[in-house]
Amino acid sequence: MFVRKPAVAGYFYPSSPKEILSEIKEFMPTLKGKEAYGAICPHAGYVYSGSVAGAVYAQLKPKEVFILLGPNHTGYGKDVSIMPEGEWEIPLGKLSIHQELAEKILKHCPFASSDIKAHLHEHSLEVQLPFIYYLNPNAKIVPITLKALSLDDSLSLAQSIGESLKESALSEKAIIISSTDMSHYLPDDLAKKVDALAIEKIKNFDPSGLYETVFTHQISMCGVIPTVVMLFATKILGATHVEIVKYTTSAEVNRDYERVVGYLGAIAL
Image 1 (cartoon, rainbow, N blue to C red):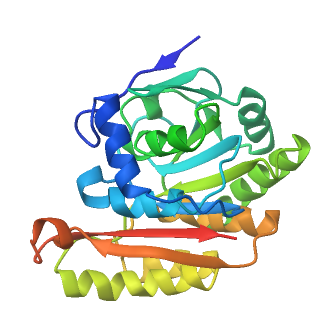
Image 2: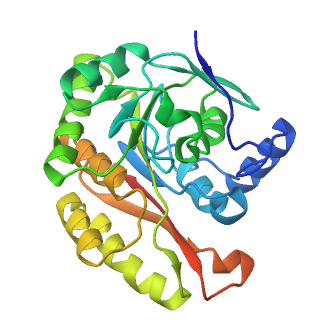
Image 3: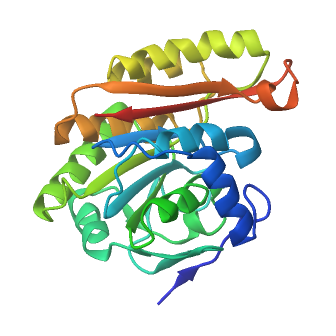
């Protein structure tokens, strides 16, 4: 069985289990246990975006399965790369892939590929795992990285995820996590202004509008495709609205207001 080793432990988040738990407990002092269909979480280093990710995961009722949708930063692998089996190791332990669900999504989505290369060095999903492990160390995952997709293909993938969950009788036992940061390397005031355009579409539960807004205004939201897919899929599964949990920029940490990255946390309920 293939074990995907940590690629960014000690870089994006601590390599010491004790330090990881200490940070997560600081980010998640209380757990709300909301029954959510999906969530949006950032994937920068914990020093920058850990408080936003923690605020999101603290809202969530622990689930048995986490479908993880993230952008492909490395360029390796296919447009839709699903790791169909094996385990992901982090300093806290290991999380197994839900093989049956992964294979169903591959079956339903003709342009999805069984692919490991895209996942070996990609950080956008790995940084979610300590939070997931903290919520439920026995959770299973389905890791999916995405390159550029059309709006129609984004909807098609979302439909495949929805069909697969329903076939597996996992709709109420799973949650779909979209991993994204918002605008990159703009002045703080401009970043907040352009991010607000995207956040408005997210808040209105409008995946098509989000897609069009991000590409029309050239917003450097790296996980726009994962987020669009998540919004489509959670709508299909029965979610009715999106709640914005937290938004911030890197300037709140490093006080550099000239080149910031935006971070958003939200949940689909």
